[in-house]
Image (cartoon, rainbow, N blue to C red; front, side):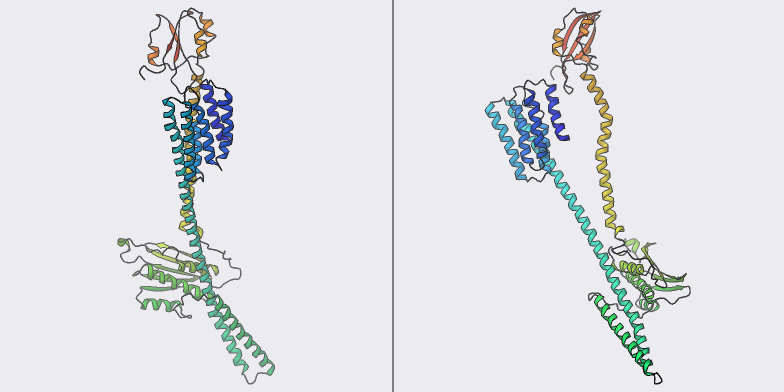
Length: 518
C-alpha cells in the first residue's frame, strides 16, 4: 500500500506541476489503477508487473511535448523487485525484451522525433537493467548470508553431538566402574555365604537359607554383568591401567615413563565411595594424558586435598619448553572428549570441574563429595556447556552486530531526514507561496496603483533572486519586487520583476532563471 501510494503520488504531483494538457483520467486515474494491480502482483508475477508498468511509460511517447513521465520510477522499482524475487534470468530477459520491443514499435508507428528514440534506447534500459542488477545482488547476498548461518548452525549441532557422545561414553564407563566395584563386593558376599554353607555345625534350615542367598547373589552378579555388557560399547578403547590401580600407582607409572610429575596429598584421607575414588583416579589420569599430549616436557603437579567431607583434585602443568618462543598453544584442542567426560563423571556425583589455561600451562580443578548422596543435584540432560562454546559465542556476536547494523540502516537516514526535512519544508513553503501565475502577470498594466496590483500578487515575494537579477537595469528611484513564474520546485524558472515609483507600477520585466548561454 505504501509503495502504491508513493508511486501514484509521484504521478499526481507531476500532473499538477506540469499543467498537463491531457485529461486526469489518462494521466492519473488509469496509471493508479494499473499500479494497484502491478505492485502487489510483483510478488508472484514480477515479469508481468514490469510489462504493465512499462505500458505506463509508453504513454509518454504519445505526448508531443516530452517522452518523459513520472512512471519511469515505477518501472525501476518493478525491475528491482524482479531481480530480488525468485524469477529466473530467462524470465527477466523476456520481460526486458518485451518492454523494449513495445517501446520501439510504438516509436516507429508514431514516427516520433529523434529525442524520443534517444529516450527509449537510453533511459528505459537504464531503468530496467540497473535496478534489476541491484536486486540480483541483494538476492545473491541474502542467499550467501543464509547459507553461512546454516553452515554455522550445522557446525554448532555437530559440536553438540560430539559433546553428547562424550557424555554417553563417560556414563558407560561409569557403569563399567560400578560393575567392577559392586560386582567385586557381591562376589565377596557370595563367597562368604558359600563358606558359611559348608560350616558343619550349621543347622540344615540355615544351610538352605544360605544356599538360596548364595544363588541369589550369584544371579545378581550375572545380571549385573549382562546389563553392563549391553551398555558397554565395543568400539571404546580398553584402558591399559589395572582396575584396582590407585592414584599413587598411576603417578608412579607416569614418572617411570619419563613424565616429570609429583603427587601431594593434604588432609586425612577418608574412606571414599568406590565411584568417588574412581572419579578422582579418572581426573588425574585424563589430566596427565592431556599434559603429555599437548604440553610434552612440562612439569605436572598433582595435589589432592581432603577436607569438610569433600575431595579436591588439582592438576597443574607448566608451560612446555619453548612454548613462548615457538608460539605453541598449550590448551587442549576444541571438542576434546576427555574434558567432557571428566566433567560428566564429576557432575553425576554432585561435584564441579573447572579447566583452563593458567600461567602459560593448563590447570584442572575438580571437587567431589566423599560420599554420593541420593539427594545430590540432578544433571541436566544434553550438553551442559554447549551454550558457552566458541561457535555459539561467535554466532551471538554476529547476530548482535547484524541487529546494530540493521538499526543503523534506519537510524542514520532518519537522523538525516530529521535535520534536512524541516529545512526542505521551509524552502518548499517559501518557493510555493511566491508564485505569480503567468495569467495574473499579463493582466498587470503600467501605471496601476500599487493597492490594485497587490490584489493579484501572491502572499510573499521571491526571497532568493540572483545577483544578476538584482543588478538588472531598473527605472531610477524605483523599488522592485520579485516573483517566481512557475511552481516547479526543482527547476530554475523565470522570475517576474515589478518596479514601483511611489504608489504606481512603473515597470514589469521577465528575468530568465538560467544564465545566458547555459
